[in-house]
Length: 555
Image (tube, rainbow, N blue to C red; front, side):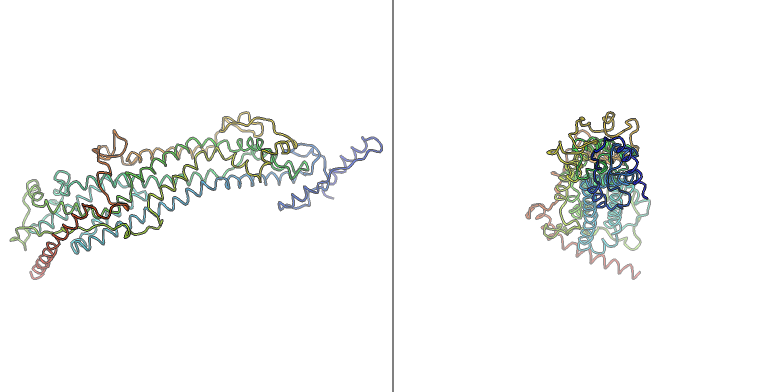
């Protein structure tokens, strides 16, 4: 005989003995409860057909009930699972926002670097031929280090860029002075003159500012998307406390035990339960909102002065411009180096050589807008940033809003129009207690959930700290600073203005070509003219190189 049968017989027999003769006693049927309970996938073996005494209940009111001890235990676990699923489902938007946008931005930045390297390689092979191919590792190393920095490598961008120009100077100095032999020590001396002589003109200084702050902003923004994704994923996986599980059971399934399976909780009742269960998550809101604000600030930088797309697209043209500056000033540069480092030894086979061949003279335009390679993300940086800004704004206050989002779900509550026909935790009637404020400390008088306000959730506090650290990085990136490598010089710190601009030189003064650039740019026309006038010198010098090479082979 099932245990619940005895529980029915004994109370009923006692009740019959105490009633006057002729009284009509009919226990309420549990038919609706059996149907609803079975629909949840539970076995009907443990559920009575009629109400039984409720002294055995530990959570629900100990009145006549359709619930056995086994049912109350199973429905408690069911309420826990449903709560966890509700939180995950309600936070789905913010989690997918960070997951999908991180993927798009990462794809975009990586392919942007690949395209920039390919563009430079193609252009320099066409322009400089074997000279470039013999020295291509200098440029390959530049892009390798840029990629390594973007992916989180321990790279000091300014030192790396300084090293690139120093190595390029060493290689070019040998090319414009083929009549001399240079030892490693001599070339090291040459590289020390990079800053003093400015052989590449003002291009290295301006490009360093542009590349440094653009890469800092891009890398930090993607790191921010990563942190947002991880925090959202972790916080959405809640582990309700025993006090919370009791409150959830009382709210969601005690109506079953009272024979009212179709009656849903009152909205305000639901809010107090959710605010108690999600008290620690609500405390995340302050730091989360500061983090979102910092992300939005860096997003604005990505659209404007720190736009990595406008830096990387024309980087081949800018480096070529620097090479031409070196060529045009080769005599003065060589003379000053010889004065500072000493007269080099003549090359054995070229003692009679007196002048340097005119190389590196041809200018090429970058891709036209319609020729620019498409990226994996399939959109420009501006459109990506516009999209993510809209999504980020919607994710503010998401954690304190969770109780409201859950309790307005008509699958959970009866809704505000039915305030008299809802479950208030005891019966089908209006819920009278006031609604608690958000956060852990405000739950001290929560009438529904037993919350220990003296013990904040350590896991949530770890997420708060992760957000705080990331927000600090974002604020530094907004000012053009890398928290790992803050330059003590004034060149990239942007001190005073907070804009990351140096000597009042902002991107508007340093004309990088963007997808919106006009077709007829006067500077570009000048470059085309230079290419036409100086193209013959490349051919002459190439022939000279062939002759010299043959001489060396013959010897």
